[in-house]
Length: 174
Image (tube, rainbow, N blue to C red; front, side, top):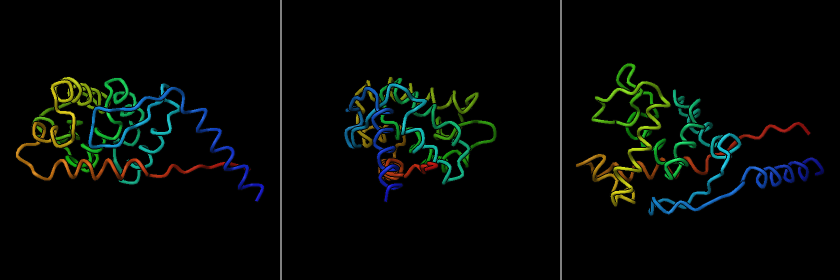
C-alpha cells in the first residue's frame, strides 16, 4: 500500500512540475482543447505521442518532440499533424522512397529533406494557409486538404482521439 501511495504522489508531483504555463488551443474547434507546456522537452505529450507512434512501428517515433515543438510554435492541436500522417501514410510507413512525405502532400509528389523538415513545413502551412484563412475545423481543413474525400476528416478525428488517451508507461523504482 505504501508503494502505491508513493507512486501516486510521484505522478501527481510530476504533473505539476511538467505542466508549466498552459493555454487552451481554440483553433481546431471540433477537437478537444489541448493543454500546452512551455517546455516541450519535459512535456507529457511527447511521451504519449512517442508511445503511440511506437505502437504503430512508425519511422516518426523519434520525432515526437518535433511534432509537439512545431504544434506549439504554430499554435496547432498537437495531435493534428501526426493524425494526418496516420491517414495519409500509416504514420510514415507508406511513403514514396526518400520523400519524408507522410502527409500526402501534393498528392504524395512533394519531397521533403528530412522528417523534421516535413513536420515543420506541414505545421507552418496548416497554420498559414488553412487556419489563418478560415479553415478552423477538421471538416473545413478536409475540404481544402483532401478534396473530394468525404472520409478524410473522420479518419483524422479518429486518430486524434486515439492519440490523446494513449498511456505513457511509468517505470519507477520504489
